[in-house]
Structure formats: C-alpha cells, structure tokens
Length: 365
Ligand code: MRU
Image (cartoon, rainbow, N blue to C red; front, side, top):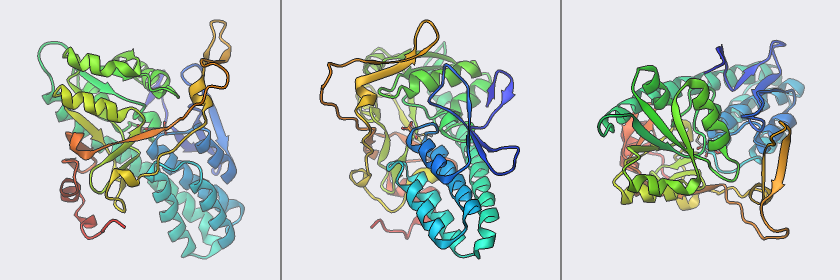
C-alpha cells in the first residue's frame, strides 16, 4: 500500500540483507517509524508488545524470528528455544503457531549450516504468499460489496478492529475488497469501530483508509447496532485470528456482538479468512485459546496531547478490577459467508471443505 506516494509493506528484509524492518504500529497514527529487528528476542518482543499485530503479520514475523535465530545459532537446541520463545508470545492467532511449526519441521530436517538461508527463503515465501492471498480475497470479496448496494449513494461497510494491510504484509483481509472496490471506482464508505481497548480501528484502520482516500467515519464500539437498525450498514466485513474447521470465527473482542446485531437486522456478516487463519485441528470455537492482556490497556488510554506529545492517562478509579479479553468467538451460524483466497463459502465444515478438500480427512483432535 502507498503512504504519501511511497509503497510500503508492513515488514521487509533491510538493505543489510539480514535484519528485518517493520512499521511500529504502536506509534500510528501519530508517527510513522520503522523498527529494526536483529534477534529472535526482538522479534518475539515486537509480537508481544504489538509493534506488529494482526494474525497474518505476526505469523510472518515469527517466521523471520526463526531466521534471525538460525543466523545466530543454527543448532537443534537454538531452533527449539526460538520456536518456544516465539510461540509463547500470543495464543489466539493460529497463523503464529502454524508458521512456527511448519518452519521448525522443515529446518530440523536439514543440516544446521543450511538452516539460516532456508529459513530466510521460507519466511520470504510466506510473506509473498500472504500478499497473493490477500489480493485473491480482494477479488472474491468485491462482488459481495457490489451486490450489497442498497440504492443510490455509497455502499456502507462496517468493520471491526484492523484487518487492513497493517494486519497482513499488504492489502489486508477484510479491507482488501474495500480497497479493490475503491480502486475500481465503486462508491464505498466504511464505518470504523474504534475497537477498544487498543483502538486498532481508531488508530490504524482510520489511518489506512485515510491514506488510501477511502471514505470512512469512526464510531464508538457500541454504535454498530444503532447504525444497523437505521439501515445505515449494507454489510459487515471482519477479519479472523482463528477460524475453526467447523466455521466458528475467533476475532477481536466485540466481533460477536456485531454479528448478533447484524443477524437481528438482516445485514450480511462476512468474514475474510485466509487459509493461514483456518485451524483444521479444532472443530468448535470453544476450544480456541482466548488471549487475556494487561488490565492497563483497559484502565488507561494512550494518545497524542494537543501539544503533540504522547500521553497516557487513566480513565478508571485507581484500583478498579479489570479483565481484558482480547478476542471472542462468533459461531458460524451467525456468519453469512467466509471469503477465502479460493472463493466464498458457508461458515461450516462442509463449506470450508468444499474449497479446501485436501483437509477433508483431517479430523479435529
Ligand atoms: O490484537 P490484534 O490487533 O493482533 O488483533 C487483530 C484482529 O483481531 C484482526 O481482526 C485479525 O487478526 C484479522 S487480521 C487480518
């Protein structure tokens, strides 16, 4: 995607040929800064601290984390420890675990001296595949936006969290069809949920859409039901961190409530799911591990003060008990359809298997 005329991905190998550079998403939308990752610990910290976030992007970052580890020490022990360090960063997005497991299996099969170059090549392939996948989701999702047009005026899309290009390597998942619609001249407007507590909507989605020139309006998280009751939403599109083999969708906390409101108001509710976010080993959403994060993300907000300085302020009484669930599960029965890189299907085992028949014999454990 372009930022002020220059094309960026969210992650790339630096000019030195081995360190990895990423956009620091904790500083957006106020500052665009690039961070350099030179060790596996720095890669793990970038994922944990959400310098990089979004299911596909953290999967690719973990892959490069293994490459950094193998460059420093290609031994079996270092490989095991790196996989463990990276795997412990965030639990919900299946992309992270899948990337680590696939890379570890391949690397452990070759001699240590070949591991670093193989790890960089595999991580690069994962990144390129992610871009191609997002682009394909854009093509498959575009007709859903076209057909949701209710009359004159723009098609109104509601989205939650950030499932745009910042959550992937480029293009995004939920926002990819929106970008393509905009590129092809369709009049499209996006309702952006702020997405407390980390404000991925207010900070990241609003920034992305603004840079791309897509019309959008920020709303508080609880506004979606009201908008739908008043006919102001033609369709919802969200991303996913883990979609089960049975079609249940884990995504940013609050997604489930949007799906309930959509069902009550006959608004189509679509999930953009790259196959890298499908967990064929789990049938039901109840088995998805739900990340819990620090209470400070809820009790405090961070932003830019009027003098331009970064500020962090408390919004609760001191000592208020806080729970911070980062994700929830939307049952497949509330999902109108899932948009993948191979096409659109029902949010069910049958639907997903019709597009991915190679997983038909994989029984969830
Ligand atoms: O906690 P985050 O910001 O990593 O959560 C991201 C989301 O929930 C996205 O909607 C999801 O990863 C899909 S991104 C293509």
